[in-house]
Length: 270
Image (tube, rainbow, N blue to C red; front, side, top):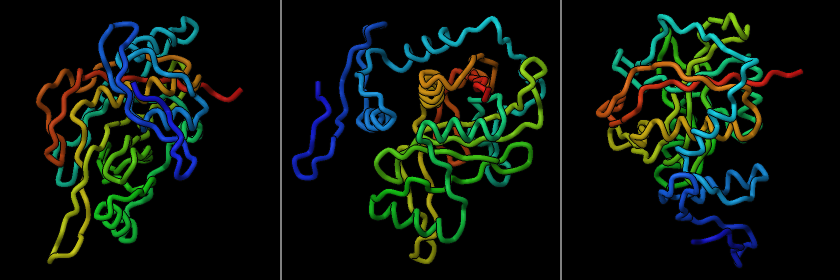
């Protein structure tokens, strides 16, 4: 098992992937250096004792609150985004109840960045970063569409370079939970694991990312860290696209999911 070490060249803490055994299910799991670094940046220096699936299960139990019983207005909501030309995109796998301000504050607290808007300059910057294997921590995300419009918010956390990142898109539904009186947001979260620079006439003309096929892992990670940070009042689940073992998103990337949507009710300012 490797541990956090100080790099003698620059005096900075370095983080290496760690192979750990879950204290709950006895399975071996990898705690990545990037996740360690992110937790350290939030002041969390303890070593994980449970795998992501077990931590997600504990988080669901931990937020059980008989005083808050959300009733998200779910009927008729779309559960699949669309890419350009109407091609089926990423499925909805995450939702929040809360104001836009509460949503942004939660992400800021966790060190998650708002993605830059798409533009010619950001396109060129992300292409250059991809070619150089460099960082662009607020790189834009491609547009996906729900309710006939592109995402209202997009967040991300880079994993070492522009090619790898956790990221999510969110859409305001225009609906409010009658029980909590909070606005409902739908989201699609995934993890990018690679990037390809597109060329036209031998010149960079954009980029496209490739996603990790395990969408549930990305969903459960974001849910767990928000619950553990005390930002979430209660978590419930609703049916999404349904269990899918051989899905494809708008870019043709394979994905699999249990098909559920995790809905988090954010704590509101007193």
